Every structure is written in C-alpha cells, then in structure tokens.
Length: 177
Ligand code: SF4
Image (tube, rainbow, N blue to C red; front, side, top):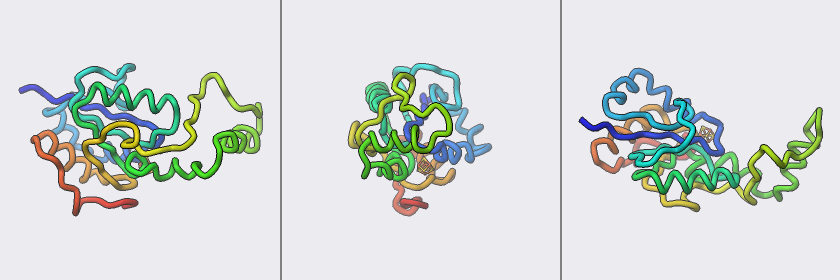
C-alpha cells in the first residue's frame, strides 16, 4: 500500500500545536503504517519536498521568510491544513499588529536588551507589517481552530483526510480551546 506523504510546518507559533500533535503518543505508531513524515521540525529534511499529500501548518505568517515558505508549501502540497488559532486567525502573533514594525523591533532589541542593543538586520528574517493568518496568503483546505487543537482533534483530522473524507470539526474544537 502506498503511504501518504505528511509534512508539518512551523511558522510564527509557540510550537504548542506541534506539541499537541506529539501528544497523539502511540497513535503515531498506527499512523506510521499510513504516512511517511517527510518534513517538519520532527524530522531532518532541510528542504520542503515536492508531492506532499497533507501538511499541518502551525503559526501565523509574520515574516518575509514565512511568506516565502508558505507559498512553496502550497505549490508542493495537495491538502493544506491550518492548524491552531495562530494559523487560522493569527491569534497571539497578531498582538504586535497595532504597532509599527520599527516600534516592535526597538522594544525587543533595544529597550529590553541587556547586551548588544541593536536591531539585527542580517540573520533575522524581516517582519511583515502585520502577522496575518495563513489563508490570507494561500488557499487553505481545512481549518482546525484551537490553542492548541487537542491530540484527539489532530488525530481525527488526519484519519479523516487519509480516508478521503473532509473532516467535520463542528463538534470537535473551537477557538481558544
Ligand atoms: S495556536 Fe496556541 S498552541 Fe498553537 S502556536 Fe498558536 S499560541 Fe501556540
């Protein structure tokens, strides 16, 4: 049997949604019979591969690097899942949206810095003017609210998609839960 190619992507999020996916615990062993995990923080692949069947995307799109990544992910993936409130609404990362980027950077790198007070320009991706949800940049196929969505919900989403069905999350999850 051909396994589906699964990826996970971490944009501007706290990693809590990935932690919740890890909380599927032994159900990963069952899933291992159905999917190959081809990309994500939990595996060593450096480049997002071609021909991915399902991707779980955590986090908002907040930087130029996030934007470039999510566009590449969309091009190379059949089913894109916005996983968690940060991906779905921009949630916590959007708290900075009422301030200009220059003010945010000054606060982080100068006012709150104990050492080397300067805004880094070379190794840190440039922030976009606002942190925005994934669907404002690319087409999203499945929205999974929650902060984070529970392991049960993530398992349900994956198993439904793997069975060729669109997951109905009406009674499974809600924003902030
Ligand atoms: S939705 Fe919640 S758990 Fe997931 S990345 Fe955002 S803040 Fe973290």
